Structure formats: C-alpha cells, structure tokens
View 1 (cartoon, rainbow, N blue to C red):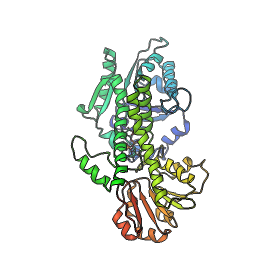
View 2: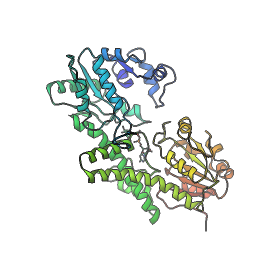
View 3: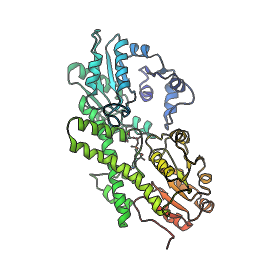
View 4: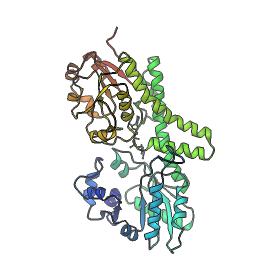
Length: 440
Ligand code: UDX
C-alpha cells in the first residue's frame, strides 16, 4: 500500500488494522517491519496520501477499493488441521465490510488463499441485500522478503483475476489503472479469478520444488563426490531451466512456502487427486529430510556425539537481509541440536530478537551473541544457517585460534571459501560437496 501511495499521489491510501500497537508503530519512526527501502517510501507519503489508522469502520465507508490482506495461517485445529488455510480472519473481515459499506466497493484478495475463496467472499458479502454492490478481484502478491521494495517497484508481473461479467471486467480495469501508474502494461496480466487464486499457490510450489530438487541432489552429490555447485551451474545454463533458485541449502523456510504447499496438497486431496497431492507433499518431505540430514551429518562427523559440545549457529533468519525467522530451518535444527544435548551459541545481524522468542520455551543451554567472532570463541563447530554476506568476510584465522580443536565448519549455504578455511586448519563440511578434512 505504501508503494501505491508513493507512486500515485492522486490516490488517498488508508491502512487499517485491529492492532493499535501496530498502527502506532507504523505512525512512528520505528516501523514494525524491517525491509530495505520501506522506511523511505513510507516517510515520503505518510501524512500526505498514506494514513495508518485503527478506524476500520471509517476506512470501509470512505474507500472505493479495499485490499484485504489479513493473515491466513495453516489451521491449528479441527478439520484440515496442519494443512488447510485458517480463514477465520478473512471471514470476519468480509462480514465487517458488509456491515459498514454504504456504497459500491471493489474487494481485492491480497492474502494468499485457497482457490475458490472469492466465491465464499461473494456469498458472505451478498448474504444481506443492502443495495451495495461488491465486486471481488484476486490480486496475489509475489514479492519476496528482503527485496520487497524492488519487487514492488519493478515486478515480473502483476496478476489480476476477475469474474468475466461486465461489472467484473469494469472492476478489473479499475485495478489495472492503479498499477499502470508505474508498471508497464505488458506486465499487468489478467485472468479468470480462479486461475489467479491458484497461480499464487502454484508459483510458490514451483519455487519450493526447485529448492527441494537441488537439495535432494545435494544428498546424492555427498555420496558420489560430485559437487552440487558444478551440477547446478551445468543444469542452470540450460535456458529452458534458468539459473535462479538452484542454491542447495539447509532447507527452505519463510512464512509462505510450506504453508502454501500444504494448502495445495489439502486442496488436491479435497478434490480426490491423491497422486497430485502426494507429488507436492514430496516437496515438503524433502525439505524436512534435508534439515534432518544436516543434523545426522553433524552427528556422524563429530564422532557420533554432540552432548556437551558447543555449536555456533551463523544466522537464524530464514534467509539473508531479513529479521524474519518464521519456519526458518534454523528453528528445527536448533531444537534437534538441543535434543542431542549440544550447547548453542546463536548469532545473527538482524534476527536475534525473533530467535529468542522462537526458542523461549526450549530448555537447554542457548546463548545469543551478536558479534560472530565473539560467538564462535570456544566452540567446537560453526554451522552456517543463513547466507548473510558478512559471514564471508570474517577473520577466520582469529576464529580458528579461538575455537576448540578439532574445529568444524558446516556451511549450510555454501557461502564460505572452503579451501581457505581448510588451509587455516578447519575441517570443512559444505552441502553437496566433498568435505575437506585433516583427518587421516
Ligand atoms: C517467497 C516467494 O519467493 C515470493 O514470490 C512469495 O511472494 C513469498 O514467498 P520469501 O518467502 O520472502 O518469498 O523468500 P524466498 O526468497 O523465496 O526464499 C524462501 C526460502 O528458500 C529461504 O529460506 C531461502 O533461503 C531458500 N532458498 C531460496 C534456498 O534454499 N535456495 C535457493 O536457491 C533460493
């Protein structure tokens, strides 16, 4: 919404939320979300044509277009538990819009939703006939964290799904006009509403599938002395495949991939498509397998016991350039390391506050130290969880001297100079590459 306000000074954009603390933060100097470039565009528009408020009723009454961006987490109860999307906030919002609207509105689904949600939305909105016409559009958001502002400013595509009725097409054209203020027309695509809803789930499933594909091959590389970076390069140079999203890792994380795939799997099962559901479930299974593989590799490498050993995790965020730790592979890996009775020292440039909350209920020896040099002192092993650029430029001679011996490095993101680390004295265990060790 900040980007729309920034690019379209002729519109008035109001963001409403039920949480007064959040709104106060959005109105302060300290925004509640860390995202490079966000602060600049919020500050450029706030108070001019961008407003943050808790007055939901007023917001609904005044606006012509309402973007519904409430959370749709995986259900934690009842039917579809652990798989399908929890639509309770969505449902409540639809009822609120119906209650307060006094003029015709375009309702835009921004949250990621199961296909056919627009139908439920339409049914809720039209359940009481108050003479107001609602037109529901689907406009999924494809931005990634850390590059959100760039992705919004220069998107690969904007997708707008609508009903193919005259009023549906008219509403669709109004939303096209909004984006056309800065996005080239050929990148604004339209479709039927169900294709649009489904495309978002499928885009995330395909991205995650690439990571699970490369991670599955990383396991085979470790058995065969092939090198995953070389394999990924050779595969990715095929222009039909492309070279993006082929970095082997400790597994994918983030608030979207797992949730959206499970949602897709649930939908497939709902429609009796068991084979299709199993196929996509495999993407999540490989991701779990990869995290467990990291633990078993550490265990077997460090002489089959981690009890009492100090392990320093380099990074906890689910990826670099964000403080977000939701579904981070580091969460699962930390819990497993604690089960093995290892002591953890965790370092991360942006995510330590979230990390402390994630591990709050875990009983074990965990400390949090922001400086990676200090954090690794006295440790038996370093395990890279997040691909923060700063980790490549550390003083590894000094780190080696300060660690217990033999000193291990598990590079779960393949971002370090492995040969150099080996020459310093480390035993180096990358993902999907032959290890470099000093053991005879
Ligand atoms: C994702 C989608 O990219 C975005 O289009 C959608 O709108 C929301 O979900 P995001 O969750 O922010 O965005 O992160 P993304 O950059 O896709 O990374 C997801 C996870 O995959 C991270 O844990 C990342 O480290 C991991 N990853 C990514 C890999 O392990 N290897 C890769 O090659 C790429």
